[in-house]
Amino acid sequence: MRVDQLHYELQEASIAQVPEGDRLAARLLHLPASGERVHLHVGDLPRLVPEGSVVVVNDTRVLPARLLGRKRGSGGRAEIFLVRRCGGGRGAVEEWLAMGRASKGLRVGAVIECGDLEVEVKGRQDDLLVVQLTAATGSVAGAIDRLGHVPLPPYIRRDDSPADRDRYQTIFARVEGAVAAPTAGLHLTEGLVAALSARGCVLATVTLHVGLGTFRPVTVPDLDDHVMHSEAFDVPATTAEAIRDARGRGADVIAIGTTVVRALESAADPSREGCVLAGAGETRLLIQPGYRFRVTDRLFTNFHLPGSTLLALVAAFAGTGRVLGAYEHARDHGYRFFSYGDAMLVEPSKDARRAPPPAETS
Image 1 (cartoon, helix red, strand yellow):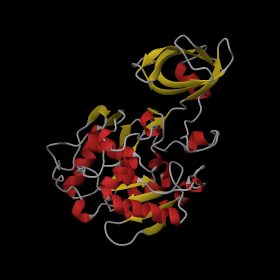
Image 2 (tube, rainbow, N blue to C red; image 1 turned 180 degrees about the horizontal axis):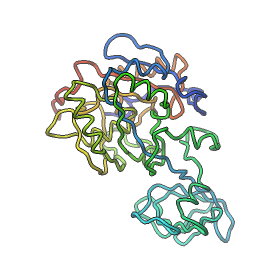
Image 3 (cartoon, rainbow, N blue to C red; image 1 turned 90 degrees about the horizontal axis):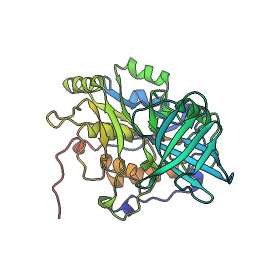
Image 4 (cartoon, rainbow, N blue to C red; image 1 turned 30 degrees about the horizontal axis):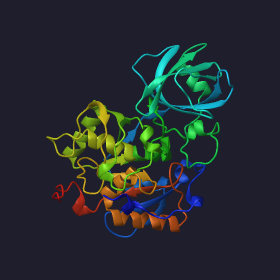
């Protein structure tokens, strides 16, 4: 698919810079399988979810991945953006992959002092730095938690605040490892989960650690040529069982966010339609129009950047023209876009639900 087919116009004033004061007060655009779009609020979500559905959330936890400090010797300002821990070792010394920037660059051997956490550049791996983190006291994990800044996306044009520590984290956040939030889940509250439970819905979890690629734009004209970033995911046995049970009852699987879709579709059971296999892995799955969805029945999601792989996923789920029309409708009706913005509940056209894959074209 050509990336320019995923373009829409958006003014900067439509990009949410702060979250809604009440998570449930965010607006919700319902895009039903048939009929007109409906303007609602996130608090209305439970009544839109069919009784007995399995509602799947991402329980990844966002790291305070931005470290600000100064280069030893010159005193110049430097920033380290942690991407992924190398290996499983934890303690007072750890090795990470990271991005970094400073006024005169960061060479191998450079040391950045971030309070009582020392960061030394040890080498490079592809386009990332290999850095060694050393905590003067306690553990590296503890120092990152104390000194790190919330990695707000670049289109949020302000410094992070103490409030972002809570609001840029879902209520399900448990497994540390993401460098960006699974933003659809930011809307959910304990009360909303209770309302879903009252409708007989089952809450299930997957873990997908949102990686660096979420900040990287698509730079090629055709998505077929885009190199998708790798993200670690894990589908617990309890989630696989809940989905199998739902299929036996004829119930739907509702994905809370595109990260959940990628995890579920990456774990799809090739021998059982609509089911998933439990286990952990890495995924580079790129979902674009023409993709045959195997697990996901409905999608609750935020509004995504033009030309992004996330918008391509939503377009694949519900049709490019239909989705872009809904985006323009939301923009014209004052919806707030991107990570701290409003949401959509998207249903595929009835004749597209787990339909046979399209014929290949040359």
